[in-house]
Amino acid sequence: MNKYSIQKQPSSVLMEVAERHKKLRKLQNLSQAEFALRSGISLGSLKRFETTGQISFEALLKAAHFFNRLSDFDALFFFEDDKKIALLFDKKGKK
Image (cartoon, one colour):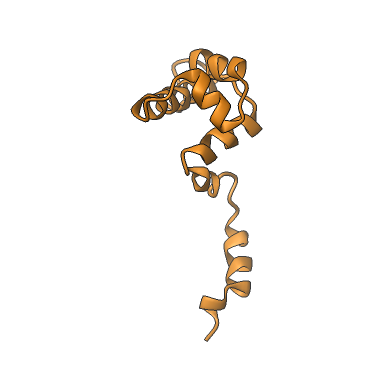
């Protein structure tokens, strides 16, 4: 895609997520070092994430878990048939 596309580019999504993460970290008055220690993410990875948006998926999940936001990933690559299958095994869906 070209840079004039209406759709967001992966690089812009990376930076938006990194900025939201940084705001959450600062709202909890956590330094980068403290957050890294408490979340299990290396300080280098955290600094890189907050400046470039680059982070491993595992580290991103650890950050989401720290903020109790892991469920934000539930819809990622969701396939409609998954919903039908889940209903088959959902006790609430049984009559």
